[in-house]
Amino acid sequence: KAGVTQTPRYLIKTRGQQVTLSCSPISGHRSVSWYQQTPGQGLQFLFEYFSETQRNKGNFPGRFSGRQFSNSRSEMNVSTLELGDSALYLCASSYWTGDNSPLHFGNGTRLTVT
Amino acid sequence: GDSVTQMEGPVTLSEEAFLTINCTYTATGYPSLFWYVQYPGEGLQLLLKATKADDKGSNKGFEATYRKETTSFHLEKGSVQVSDSAVYFCALSDPSNAGGTSYGKLTFGQGTILTVHP
Image 1: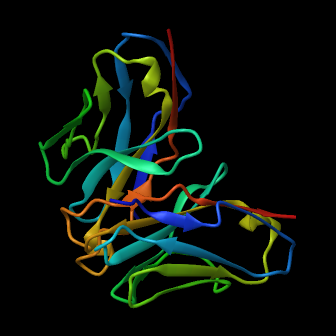
Image 2 (image 1 turned 90 degrees about the vertical axis):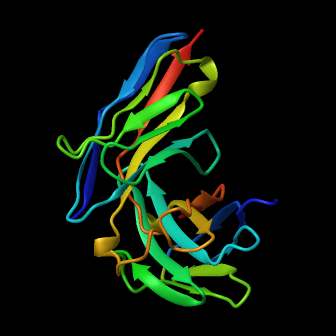
């Protein structure tokens, strides 16, 4: 069974630009979560989607947005990029949002903003 | 709000040494607790979990017991190997703060870098 796939693996963008990251969950998984990982702030929750609906949102500005499609694939978008947005963005999927459904993480997209 | 505190690292051990990585938490509800491991260039892998007080999670020789009285979930392994070198994260999910049913929102500790030498 294929794992969580994130594309692209690496991105370099300039301040002020926008970026879209993609996540394909494990087949059959309906819940997708996004996390930002930085050396200074560690792992921080961005948002969670289940059946195309946003279930939870972390404390990030409105420049960060996401969506989930009917096939459970998810995208996140960051507009008006800032230097501080440079990070590893991790996507995780699970079968559903219940207690016995662990998160499976992808290898992440490394975003560098210059 | 919820928080997770891990012992400061990095931790450096010789092969076959005993490992303990301390983790304590603060949560308003009854959280589930997790340990994740991250190898270089990879995402996080679930190592073990415990969903209620006194539960013991175990996997690949690693163990952790959910201690509600001390709000702790310390990770232990009796004999580490070079291949255990990685970053270890303690995390919790507290559905009382997440709409009641969601476990996709995890609060992570800052991570502990473990290096094991031959």
